Image 1 (tube, helix red, strand yellow):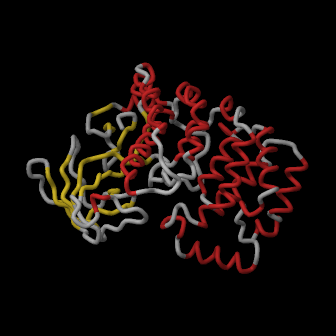
Image 2 (image 1 turned 90 degrees about the vertical axis):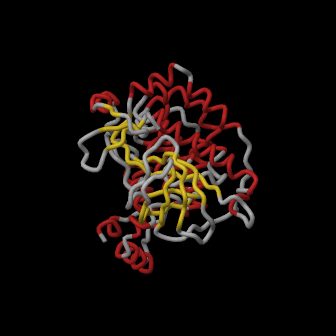
Length: 356
């Protein structure tokens, strides 16, 4: 977490996630300014940090938190418990490092229930605080690379997990999500570390379908962070990986899969013709990967999603996916001269639909 810089409420100071003061110089040296920001990525600039151990029960909106080396959460901040996000309503004054927190809604668990939360269990949960990063500290990233921290972290990717979560492996899954969180912090805006971790991408791809999604990070998002704005790395992505992500997009319609495809087509704002051709070829064989709302019913559904502010309330939903799909088609024809791709895009997304 100390690779990230956290802004305070008025933006007048930069602090590490643990609360230690840092200067703006660290942020300016980090080189994290991107040529273009993501269209729908709600995880950009955000990360979760462990702040302590909580005790609660399913159906309860109260949680007692034993704080680690971190300040108490504040009203209005967001916490993650058991993969779900909650807003903090009230917080008691700390007593011997313990606070009582009221959440905005009762605790619920989707999927496997941890033994600790079953009847007779301890009620123990890990409590994560959502933070906003103002940038990345290149000095810390360089230091950790020199120490070989990434090599130690990569060893944890070998931890075995099944395709569907089991109660007995929920803690292992929490560790793997923490691994991806760490990798993302290590590589963002740091080309040398990105290049170091390119060989680990196949192992990360193996995790894409193993339900290791957290609010702030996913295996796909981590792979995208490794490749972001790194032309040399993007040029080495095999067609098998491109085909895999197009299949996943068609199956799950999650925006992160299209975001990955767009990143490898146009890193640092400059198109890689070979990747554009491969992505267009893969999309041509999986048209269901594109959600375009180009029928009368589809346009009505899109209008309803926009009116409901679905992009804000459901950042991994259908509207976000649609935006990424349209953006990806634009990426495929920008900066290259390929009549075949241009014709495919025109047939897939006619100009009348774009104007509408």
